[in-house]
Figure 1 (cartoon, one colour):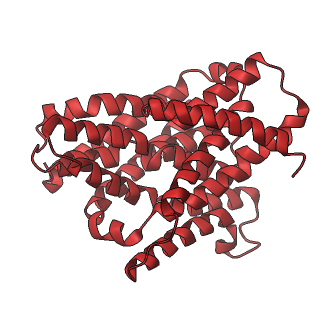
Figure 2 (cartoon, helix red, strand yellow):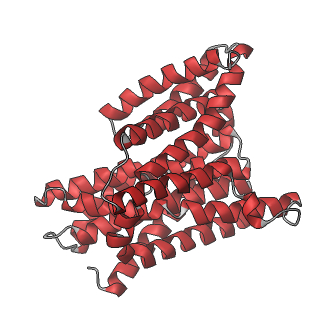
Length: 338
């Protein structure tokens, strides 16, 4: 651990600065700020080799620890009670996004890791889904940074455009449920879902009705990290030629099982009328650890490499964003939600 200390200190310092940037500008967010700061430091300052063990630890194991803690914020009983109406739309948008990502990866000869990360980030829950998926498919830090940057771009656009679009489409302005469902299923990252839903509440004097519903839908989407990650684990094992050597469940990453266990603990305690002490702290710790991990990823990212990757990842993100948004709107119309 002593070898990792210098790099961990650097990642922590970057994370503290990025966290403050995220508080001042939620749309920009801490994770993207951390990647940007880390990449800029690598570009313009020489980094000592002694920093690398801690940087790698932050980018890998700290990231997995953050995903585990994320599970303590998921109460499955609340999701099942109020989020089940959104399930058909969530399943459809995820299916459409992953199918488009697969087809365009083959058509444009994109790196599979890039298409996979942008696909799960667009369809499930932005940076958290990318963070959970990256270790499974063994994506390098530059691919992770690139994917999160693409997702960020369209998160920002969604938070600005969707409240205006909802008005033009004639969403109900008395309950906030229709727009909350749209924001919860079509916006990628939690911070942008919150921004878009809060804007709708403010525009129409709904208090926090839209925000509460949108966040519940978003948490329901987050649960799909589990089946998608398990599926990718099995595909990766098959690609490696090890799928037949052990039972399927042994291919599921430990951190993913711990994530599920954390959400089950929160759920069971709530069912018997208890709450886990320090849940708010654990949720905040998860967010900070993700930012810290993104700092490590940024420090291992070459800006030149990101620039040389071209426009195809951005175009993929745009098409996925439009595909998810249109699918959500069409299904809401068909199901009579607006």
